[in-house]
Amino acid sequence: MLILFAALFAVSYTLHSYLSAIELSFSLFYVYLFHAIAATIVYVSVELVAENLPTQAGNAYLVLMCFKLGLFLLIFREPVFENDALTMPERIALVIPLFVFLLTEAIAVGKLLNSK
Image 1 (cartoon, rainbow, N blue to C red):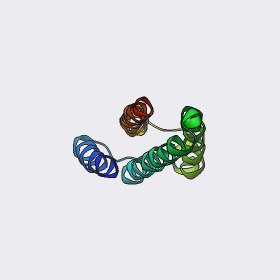
Image 2 (image 1 turned 60 degrees about the vertical axis):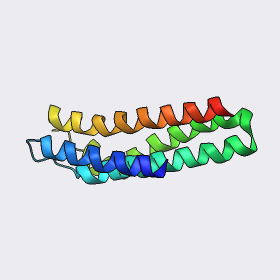
Image 3 (image 1 turned 180 degrees about the vertical axis):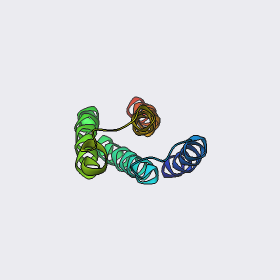
């Protein structure tokens, strides 16, 4: 799964930065890097919980998603959320990596939980 998240990071970041026509007020690389690392940590953690406490793996996933969101807000608070003048392309550039990795992570965790 680590290879999948690394490949997804490389492909999606490269494609997004190539297609992005404007200069962003934040680092798109760090946004993608955060989501790739966080998705990997969440998946590995849920896999460990599923091996030891299979009935609690779904709850662990939900808790880890809340922590992931909170950590994103803490790390990117200043460059993103204190900037009131974010343009629509900048807002979309924040949401794309979130949904790319969230969808991949949810599918991977869903397959993991169905196999246990």
